[in-house]
Each structure stands twice: as C-alpha cells, then as structure tokens.
Amino acid sequence: MARTIVTTMKGGKWWLRLSISLLLVVFVLWFVTRNLHELREGIQLLGHLSLGAVITSCALVCLTFVLAAMSYRTLAFRKLTFHELFTVELAATFINRLIPSGIGGLGIHGVYLHRRKHTVSQATAVVSTNNLLGFVVHVIVLALLLLLLGDTTGIHFAWGIFQTILLASVIVGIAIVLCIQPLRRNMHLFLRHLFTSLRRYQSHPHVVMFAGVALLGITLTNLLVLHIMTQTLGIQLEISKLFIVYSAGVLIGTAIPTPGGLAGVETGLLAGFVAYGVPSDLAIAATLAFRLVTYWFPLIPGVVAFTFARAEGLL
Image (cartoon, rainbow, N blue to C red; front, side, top):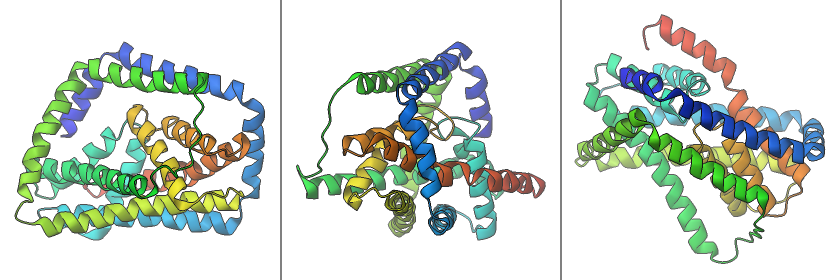
C-alpha cells in the first residue's frame, strides 16, 4: 500500500497537481483581498477566546485520536496494542499535513497493519472499511438531520461570484484529479478492494457496529469543538445548523485535494456560516479558531509521534 501511494505521488503529472494548487491559491488570495477588513477583525476576535475553551477543545481533539485508535483496533484482524495505535493516529495527522486528501493517512495505517502481521489484503480491508464507515456514518447523521428538519434548516443562500468560484474550484479540482491516470487506477483498485473488504466482515457485523460508534464519536466530538468555539465568540447557532456548517467544511475539504483539507475545509465552513447569516468577521474567527485546534494543534505531537513510531519500527 505504501508503495502504491509513492507511485501515485510520483507518477501523477506534476503540472496537473500544480494546476490544482495554483487554482486554490488564486481562490484563497481572491477571498482574502476581497474580505481583508473582515479577516483582520476575525483575527482580532480570536483574542476573545477563553483559555478554558481552548484547553477543553484541545482535550476533545485528543479524544478523537483515542476514538480513531479504538475504531482501528476493533476492525483489525489481529490483536493490536492501544498505545501503538494511538501513536500511529498522531503520526498520521502529521503525514496528512504533507500529502493531500488523506492519502498519507491511508498509507501510514496500511504500513503499520502490515508490520503487525496483517496481509496486504487484510490491511486494505481494515483501512478501506474504516474510511468508508466514517463517511457513511456522517452521511447517515446528516440525512437524518435534514429529514427531521425538513424545510426548517434556515439556510438563506444567495448565489454570487463567491459561490460561483467555489463551485468551479471544486468541479475543476475533481476533474483534474480524475485525469491523473495513477490516481484513477488506484481509485479503481481501492473500490475493488473495498467490496472485498466488506465481505470479510459479513460474519462479524458487531465489529462494524462498534467501529461505527467510535467513528460517530469522532464526528460528534469535532462538532462539539466547533460548538465551543462559536459559543465563545458569541455565535448563536443550533447544534443541527452547526452540523450542517461542519458538513460543508468536511465535504469541500474532501473534494479539494490539499493536505488535511487545507483551505477547502475553511472555505466550506465560511460558506456555511455566511449562509446562516453569521457576520463575516465572526465567521472567519470561528473558522480560524476551529482549525487552530483541529489542524494546527496536533501538528507538533504528530511530528513527535511519527519520529517515535519510526524509531520503534511501527512504520
């Protein structure tokens, strides 16, 4: 699996990857210059965050790594020690900051599982099922939420140049990724392995259920972090609406192939907040605060964990 990922990164046409990066940079620069005043005010508003809120949020982020380790331990075909899995989860956050769209995380988990006596097919089964399950759990929660709320979501969406550029960026980004032959080939292999993976758990449905609960916990914990950040800044949004905002960030962050969803997640969150009528400066402050504790805070522990994992032969 690790070899496949390296081939993908080297074999993809460099100019296509450069085009994606340039397109994203242009979009971010356009948004920053257009909202420079709101950006400055948003950064200033970060000073209003209470130390207690930041510490609580960081503790909740640590909890997401615990839950992620529990999910992998549940799905694994061989017994794995929790402290090793927790270390690998932290290390994966660092790798995901270097390699786009979660590819690094997929590879690092696959390498660890293979070193812990999983065959390549077993490692692929565990990683594939974990990622698919996380996506399915999120979609189910969002679908149930929209079904229960009906037309009361309260989104007032006005189409403009911002939304046009955002939609164009997502479409072009996906199209360019699909044009990269190694990525397209590996996507086909991933889907093929995925169906094989799911069949491995047919006789153990409770395993999938337990892993799903852990992954649901990750989603709800991240939502709680976003809730704490918005409440501290004075943004009053119901949890249901906040989940839709969070889902927009996850969706666009996944669609745009950048390390850790950088700029994509921020764009989705901002679009969601603005759609609910949150002032631009508060929307920017909440987005920056959320990404500070969920994206940047784990970076240093991730570097330490990656170094330790390499030294211990886990990766």
